Structure formats: structure tokens, C-alpha cells
Image (tube, helix red, strand yellow):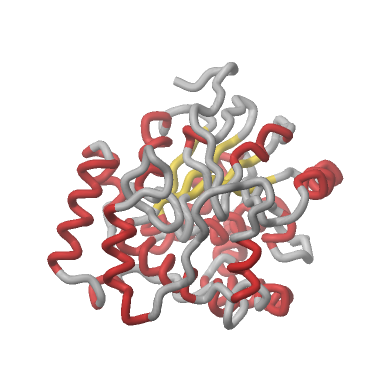
Length: 313
């Protein structure tokens, strides 16, 4: 069980990540830490937290500029990120894509964990990876402060199933067995699963958010001890819908185009589950079952497919 002396047991450094950047982070008692595997509803959850904090007077900045991704090694000097955070006078919320074995535990911080069925993660990951610009690939493969294998160029559309097979059977780090060429997806959820009953850790599921967005927003608000009335809940729920999320990112579309072909329209893409059914064949899904058995405990595997509400994909 995590304690006040808990420290990470693994160091994550690759083309995207640098877990050592957390060494300089100094939490406040009211901080919120959103940690998800990639393409599991990260920005969606950040936007909901953003809306809950600011309510009727939303911050004019898009959420990505308010809530930094601390362990992203390519997002500029860490000192600048932390200086901007220190200057915030509202309740702070930050982002991580680290699993719990690489992330510090702060007893005074609220952890919000979001997970998603791996098959749906893959489809979103594929779109994300396919739309990286040449400039983004250069930034990711900049060797400053990191050595190791470069992130391969995105494969052609025709190789989606070949990419699935690699993603299901190879790990980027030696302790992972899936997630290549990014990092472990199933591994992320499994590291948090044993701690799901701690008072300052809550697990949310993408499928639950699709099925009952207002209910999940209320559950989040109660956990964060943010009071909202029915009118505020209705307003926040509307603002957190997919169409409104797309609108919220339009002000930074030009900046997003530096990283993604198509800009914010590629980054906030479909927001749906089940697209894998038209892509993956039975032999592909055998690899998924094998990865589940390797990387997940049975109860975690069942939850990851079905969520708390049992909706699944």
C-alpha cells in the first residue's frame, strides 16, 4: 500500500516520457493529478475538471495550456512548466501518462485515473500516431536528455493490423509486454488497480463516461469535494460533450497543426468506442486475450472491458 515514503520503483524515459521530471514537482494540498494511459480520455477528463473548477467563469485558455503534462520530456524546459504552475492561484490540476510504478504518490493529492478498453485505445492510438507531423516526430526523437531507440515513423494505413500485432506483443520497456512503439497500456491500469480503494485515488472508465456523462461528472465532483447544483451539472455536462470539446480546442488549432496533421480535428477525433470491430480479425483478438492474461489480474481485465456500469464496447 502506498505510504508517505512511497517512491517510484521504475524510471520511464523514452521518446515521449521522462518520469524524473516529477522529482522537482511540489504539490499543493488541493492539487488534482489526472493519470491515464494514452488515448483513454485524458483530455476529456482534464476538460471536465477544468469546468468543475471554473464553473460559471471558465478560464479562457484551452485546458492543455492550463493543465500541463509533467512527464512529457518534449514540452519545453521543466523550470518554465513549474514556474507557470507556481503562478496559478486557482486549484491546480496536472496530467501524467505514467503508470503508478513510475509516478510519485502524494497523500495530499487527489488522483483521477481514467482507463479504456485496450481495443478502443488502439484505434485512437492509431489515428494519433498516423497524424504526427514531421515536426512532431523530430521533437519526439530529439536525443537531449535521453538515449535509446527512436520512435519509428508512422506506418502506412495498410499496416494497421501489423501494428496491432506489435502493440499487443512487444513492450517498449523491459518490464512491459505490450504497448510498442509507445509504452504499456494495460500495464498502466494494472499498476493502479490494487490501490483503487484509497481515499485519494478514483478510477473512471471511458465507457461509463459515454454511457452516463452527467452521472460520472457528479461522481467526480463529489470525490473532488466540489459542490455543484443541478443547473451547473447540466451546463458542465453539455460543455463536456464531444462537439463542445472540439469547439474548445479551435483557439489553439494553429498550434496543434505543428504536432498533428489536421490540427485539433485530428487530436479530438471520434470520441467513440467499438471501431475495432471493423478492423481486427479473430486471430488478432487471440493476441489481445494473451496480452490480458499476461498483463492484467482477472478482475482488472473484466473491469477494463466493462467499466463500473457494465456497458463495455
